[in-house]
Length: 365
Image: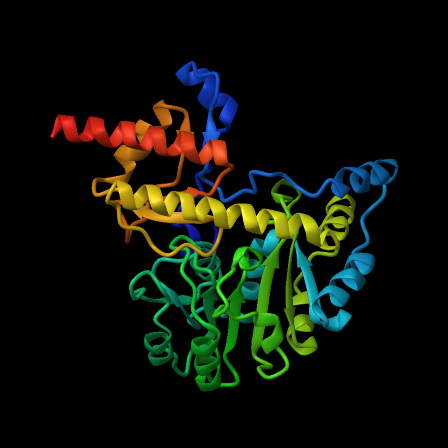
């Protein structure tokens, strides 16, 4: 067998252990997972009814165009139906963009500590990733502009950025977009947009009419709580969406996912409640990190990246033994962990466990 030469040494994604497996291995009754930026409050109560109504149709293929969901989403965002594309999570839209636009040797620009799927998909297509260092945990848009060249096809901006949780402002983003050449596609990944409360934040969808080379990604996995159903979407100009649709598989989202997403998008009260609870959780964690004298990046999504002042992998392992799963192993931030903002109870248990681990670390030193 002869695969593409440039994929032979690509790393395989390593998922975290399932909660039940961790419980068995460590003999724990309770394990709190704060590693994947999931919604601790679940999903809209309307989703269950929507899913149950689809069970009778489980033997039927889904609507390949997601027509009903497209209609609802277009109305929600004030765009046309032909501006929307759905994927198996927004991850698939990223992969489809790479498939549609990259030839081997093309260049793509991104931050050096951002969502890893941008680079992995560029690698698969043989594109060259130019990674620009973050500036205080935030996209350095001026430096990214300086890296755009004749071979650049796509620029990726994650806002809020994963894993740091920082944002670029509306003013900064518009200034950036004004200077990006028209032939370069800008992918604005707003997976956590619904959590943001900062008035300086930019709603990328409102910028689409001015910037035809922009596509905005959103997902139902985060604030809508549909992570297991794998459904996300992109919104852009019809010509851009058509190109991406040309490389999309016909039935890439399920009937159940479409029905659940349609029920979720209209439950504005659930979204507002989750946003408010998440903001309260961020404030609590900020206060606790300040008390513990641990620096952290400003959090605008549903997670916080905090400097634990010691190799993060060691903290991760120690927290795991106490039944708390966080995220570590970021090459550019080896002393940082990323923790999802959980429920009030989960946040308190995380802080208690972290304080316990840090005390033990101090005692050993």
